[in-house]
Length: 255
Ligand SMILES: C[S@@+](CC[C@H](N)C(=O)[O-])C[C@H]1O[C@@H](n2cnc3c(N)ncnc32)[C@H](O)[C@@H]1O
Image (cartoon, rainbow, N blue to C red):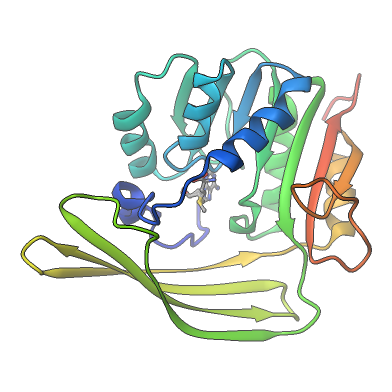
């Protein structure tokens, strides 16, 4: 794995530093998955917080992440949740001994920096889904114009941990030519004695055009069932920069 994904390892213990309520997001995924079935596959799961919520609501969830520290921290927090399995694995090369999943969703494909790797991931996901099962991908589409968002400080809604305070600074640059979004952050952690530790989290997210996505999905055994512009499920409209695609595993196709 040569992708540079920044420093998720150091983030693991403080991944939920922002203090934001995520129930609306978790419920969105429960409601989306339900008509397709009970078994959910979840790449890029970080700590597996969404998976734990869904498992507590009765889903069987197979969640995985490439960063071992994320899964280790996830095991500490959610290891006792019935119906949740957490694995350390790369979305571009995974093979789990599980029954076929009904629903898979991913919002973090920007970490997959080449189309070859995107296709490997689609192939692996397809193999783990049942025919008629759904893959939902949420992604930004390439920027029409380059842009720069200067450094800004991000504070949590409220401090989450009793023994430390966490905040971040960061700037972002979008490059229309390459379809990349460069994110450069410094994470600060202050302990009870006022000592501040910091680490860098810098990476880029790669955007692919809608045409590239559609042709890769068709090539790897999916058909496009829906395209949305937001989580309210309004139809995607030409030129929208954000795209939610609902792809269905075709029947009788070997990939
Ligand atoms: C923005 S975080 C995901 C947040 C998560 N969806 C949540 O609900 O909290 C991106 C995650 O993707 C993981 N990741 C990056 N590249 C990956 C890959 N090739 N395979 C699996 N996970 C990957 C990182 O380790 C990181 O935990």
